[in-house]
Length: 405
Ligand code: GLA
Figure (tube, rainbow, N blue to C red):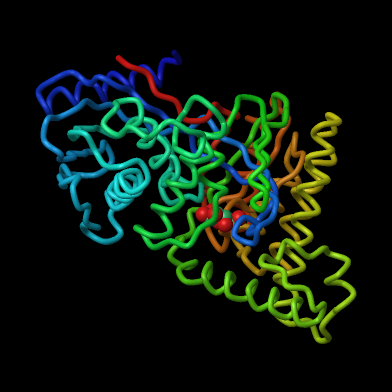
């Protein structure tokens, strides 16, 4: 067990003991994720390529006899206590809304809680940076609840579980449902699938229309996350606006082709090109981004399968250009980070990661040059903007897991 990790686990166990008066029985963990290709494709029924990274959420805990949950975190004050019979939302926009949401969705799918639990959360996923600290928390909690046995799904691949990919996929859908219906965030499946399916030295491929998942070897590259430290509040509302524009693009393509497609990704880029709108409308540009992203994911998967990282990196950089020009979800800070990265040693490719507008970029970097790369990006970005980005040199990591202590 790496030093920093074991220190963190010890701290979590000590703080659990001090809070609840007993030793924890289960330890669960789940990584954060980066989006490598396939930006804003997930809710359009498209293709995604992501990776789990070695920044993670850890949960330690044990059972309690009453059907009550008590949850505390190293990053926030207080203990959230709530009944597991009829789970209520609690204080809005608090981290515990995610915890309650997972409990709610797991109970709704798996038939309710048998007893309750106490838990303590710790981790090193940067919060609010676009690395999906929320899906990491959700996935760790899902793994924790299943392993503790306070929630027992019926047997069958359609129910959440950690032993098979089908069970993991069912868990991802339950976690996504908790985010959509309980937390009220209309995100797609990318985040939860990445946190659950990640594998060391691999990328995770997901087809959001057939639900096919694959792990594709990525090799021992560094994944360098550059956090612009610009507020994600700026992005408030933009995600839903873009979803609406994608819907409008879908409607228009349906009219033009007479095809009753349900998702934008059922159309091909050539079909869109055949119906070019002059001057280019927002809906047309958004659709071009999504359909060209699907294309890039497909080409990226072939490139990785052929061991061609250079092509994969180029596709990532093309993805960023498409975000900047067509989806308009980049920002000055994110563009500057990408420019700084492009001029730094070891750069293979880079793009914004996740929703966009703020947050971070993800860069594929030669492993042996990761540190000089990080230093160079910091210096170049600072020189151009006077600001200091946070740079995290990451490696790929395994998806969520749990063990009994
Ligand atoms: C956010 C959402 C994901 C996905 C990305 C954009 O991270 O949570 O579901 O839509 O944005 O690709």
